[in-house]
Image 1 (cartoon, one colour):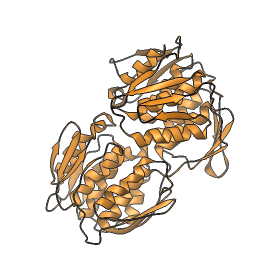
Image 2 (cartoon, rainbow, N blue to C red; image 1 turned 90 degrees about the horizontal axis):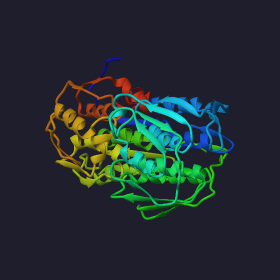
Image 3 (cartoon, rainbow, N blue to C red; image 1 turned 120 degrees about the vertical axis):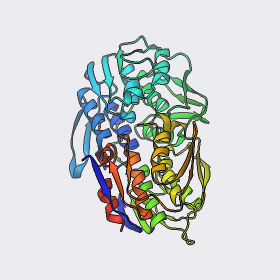
Length: 429
């Protein structure tokens, strides 16, 4: 499908059962593949990003088979992949590419990792430098500092603190944390600079502990893994609904009256993106949380308040707020979002361009976006999505301003939420 025409709507109400979290799904798959024992994973996300992780694990010799009631059974390899040589294509899935690169660098085999052209533009040098300091053998097959990579057996040593930058992507730290237990040695990681997206590291630490590996954390600058720890299957893992995906529907409820309820994530979530509701509440939206659901309604006043806030902790969900800003009572500023520049596309530039098509006045900087909403949204805008699933889902919310839109390349949502547009159509009118 080259494009999708969305009708003008004004109201949103209903409920949505969320697909599984991408961040939890791919971490669970890799940890289950590395663990001793079999793991039954329930409510796993079915998307492009999880498909490439599953395909990679199978090529590495991990046995994966259907379980009962739609679950997936992963037979772990106890820390040593059977395949000592493989070529892996990982699409544009950072949650697959970065952790697998770190794990394979410590496995003693010969591997090649590649992805789509955009993945080859996303920097990985900070992770590679940290792994090389451990003695890993990693070569760049294209541009220096970027995938694709060739990995060979290295002379590994874990006898000094491992230093990694934290201000480009938290996935570099996640990758090191998940890989280091394979050495069996005590290890310490020191984060250089500010660590962004801290809630995603909390997901990593939580899941590692469920698989039997504990990490001691000294603030956000130092992480210590005791020696002798190995991954062990917890038996059954349930994947929460995706909190980032919840943001689109909760925002629809705040804009379009509501109530809109999302099911599968709530106050008991381990995902930092549930804090998206804090931003909606600050704008005046009415939010109610249960352990496994969240409900959003428009403000009692009927108008959302403008905001000026730091969104370093929820960079993915913050994209939704850039579109919600179209419905605020004044200019809105999203700060400390430099990581948008190295995502599936340059999200700061892309979001600025598409919001301008809708009539907004947008100022962009290296790490901020200022959005001044128009008196009326421009109708019949043609929205480009840049092969970025979140651009497509976020911008669909603009139709709640009573304007029709054309979304180019709508199937890019398959990266994390193949059924998004059907679910969105079910709650708007």
